[in-house]
Length: 283
Ligand code: URA
Image 1 (spheres, rainbow, N blue to C red):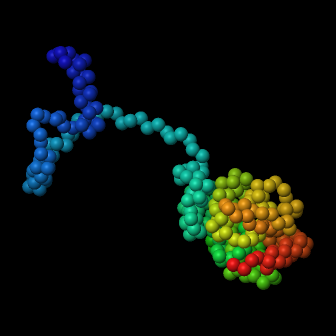
Image 2: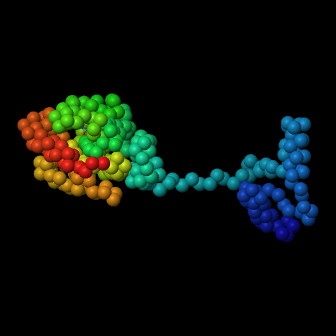
């Protein structure tokens, strides 16, 4: 550096400042320094005089600090990725029902959760051989955090009782774990978003028979656009991991409350469920 050469001086200062900011706050001399002794000396000096300042901690001149790095906004990510992992990834990482329940309860990527009072995971017996899958919690379910506890749930209980079952012999969940506001029909986007959760739920519960309650349930799990009028009463095989589970679609109890004339068909479905259950090989 030429003495008096202002440009080089500024360059050197800039380089030193950059090194300081990078943590290089010490020059290496010809004689090795025993840092353990120096540290101990500094510590002792601090104990004796609390106002003693560590000479080895370089204090960058405040007004000469480099401007803070420019923060660029993160690239936009879909809402479902807000937690960093997709529902599919989250569900796949759950190896038992307790973990899945906790994961769903902690999931922040579905707007329905912001209006719901509870996450409705399941009711009944997780070891049961029959699993029922409904659509979504209604008002009472949302308040209590349990599926099918309102009027349609009471009808469902009567239907089950008619073939000799109660809730301890079945396991019950829904396609959606959160109530859509005002009990509106869930959108395809909401169903698609939550689908990995119920798919994993079925896989972990591993029932021998599925009873799908209503069009939303059967359409979501079989990815079909056919209506419930055509789908009900027909057995299909539902692929769940390595397994194929016999699945029967029937009318949703809420629909039966509105259209009691359809109970006759539902009764046939319920009887078919019982017959299928009775023919299962003993565990
Ligand atoms: N309807 C559903 O589909 N599920 C419930 O849990 C309650 C009503």
